Image (cartoon, rainbow, N blue to C red; front, side, top):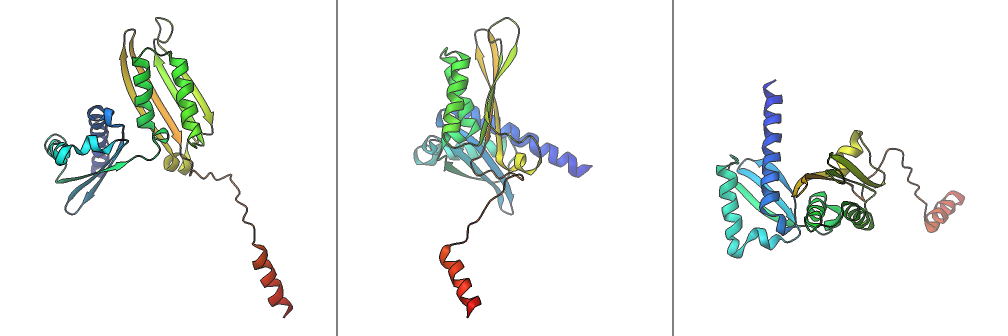
Length: 212
């Protein structure tokens, strides 16, 4: 029971850190964080489209961030590194931020949803789903989904290859929710059958050895 409580507490802390970093570095194209405990402290890898904005001049921003993570979130001796996101369109954090920014500019939610879906699938995703919720057209809150490809809902493929991010944007009608789900191009599903063809020279070599 104590172990389960510890896991829950750690997951809550990671979610709080993720939310803090997202708000702090949205302009840098924040794309998520990976936190691992080490014998010497905590290894923190931040993913971003523009790493330089997180590192800061002479590393000042990252030094200040390490202090915040240690004092506010109780991360022992955080060692921070920043990794550049090579394909932003396959990162749900980045795409959720882009959708939120477009909504703030007054672009119609349907146009934004279809645009983002096209960007994600065009980058090679095997599946994607965008949910925009709030007072979209009436006084009553509702949600609209934009979906393409295949998205596993459970099992190992869902845990290993599906990434999800949620953000909120404050507009005149009220708060809008944005959820982006992306299935990695590297995803492998149990029902997939991969055929491996033998090379002609290998087959010929085998036939020759059998004949000899």
